[in-house]
Image (cartoon, rainbow, N blue to C red; front, side, top):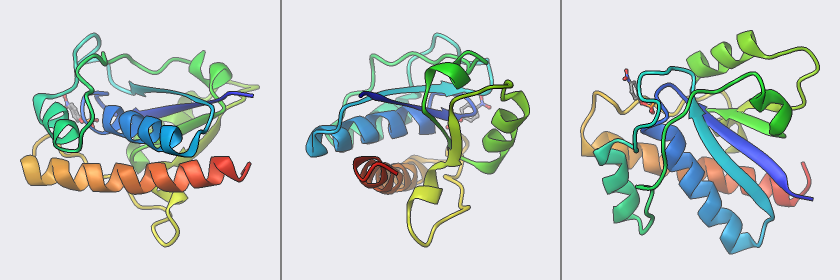
Length: 155
Ligand code: 4NP
């Protein structure tokens, strides 16, 4: 059975596309059958490709994310996805507030899946420089590895 995972940040042009790419790569390595997507709680960047700095850090790590396009999270996503994974606490709170009755998706914070980093946020790199995007990449790859391990164990 395919497990569907949605990553959610604010703009869907920096952190969540990176998380999407990192989990897809991790799933491929592990032979995990999953569907991965990402979205933003905000609508400013709908239809836009990932931020050039996000495309650059993905490229430095051997992944191409230039085909991705931003979209806003919807109520329907709570019925379509098994897991909705927020990149930070503000977006987690926004998702909790819009969660429809009878939602199937389990909500979590990405770094909840990394032992010892529960409750931590992936910091917003939008107003930062390349070093902030390198930190985002390190965080999302750690989160993706922890999440993939959990999914492969059926948790
Ligand atoms: P993201 O980063 O949530 O990781 O995609 C941001 C992108 C855009 C904005 C803020 C954060 N913005 O304010 O437009």
